[in-house]
Length: 151
Image (cartoon, rainbow, N blue to C red; front, top):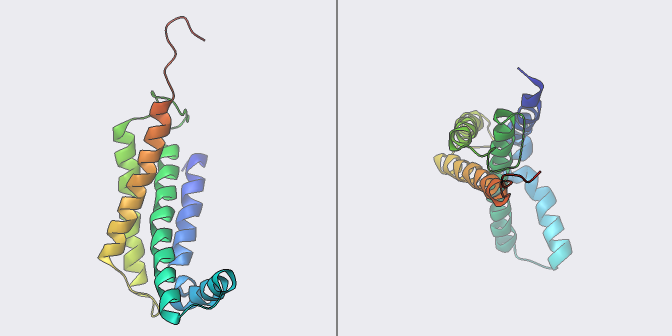
C-alpha cells in the first residue's frame, strides 16, 4: 500500500465508525434535534424527524462522493487537475471501489442492532460517488490545455 491510499483508508474508517451504533438515527437525533430547535425554534417531532432523515441521506451521498474523489486521487497519481488527468477508466475504478465499499458497509450495518442495511442506501451511496466524480471531471475539463508554444 502506498501513501496515497492513506486518505481513502482513513475516510473508509470514518464511514465504518458512522455505521456503528454511534451513527444510528437514535444517536444522531440527540444532536440534530436540539440543534434544529435552537436554529428554527419550536418544531414538531415529525418535522425534526423529516429533516433528520434528509440530513442523514445527504450524509450518505456526500460521504461516498468524498470517498470516490479520494480513490480517484489515489489512482491518478501524480495528481493534476487538467484535461489530461481525467480518464474515464480511472473514474470507473474509483466508482467501483466506493460502490463495493458501500455494499460492505450496508452488510456491516445489518449486523448492528440499532442499524439496518439497505439496498436503497447502496444505490444512494453509488450515486453520491458518481456525483463526486462528475465534479472532478468538470474541474479537470474546465482547465484548458496549453496551446503549442504556451508555457
